[in-house]
Length: 140
Image (cartoon, rainbow, N blue to C red):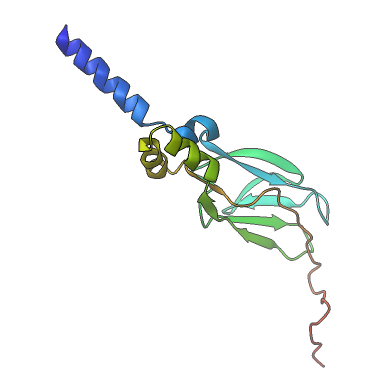
């Protein structure tokens, strides 16, 4: 009987320690939201993999949307716009972790759940290939 209780206590503690506030409230996905811009319906790529067309609002596995990931907006005849993903510590999850005992902060840092992408909805305006912008010099 004592052996079963010990095993149950061990399993329970592993489950409890493997989820912090960021995991409970933030889940295992991050949002990738792109507004419709110019030109409309640009293709959205994440690290070379097509995710859809703008506008889009998708939940992406947090392991795919990492610090340093590249989001590309492409449209035929236009220059590709590239956004480098930055992830930062989420302040509300950190506060919740600290207020509920502090140990959860270590869990959320170790699992990576404490970090979220630092952008909101992505807005874009792609330039035509071969076009010039104000301030560029013309070569003769």
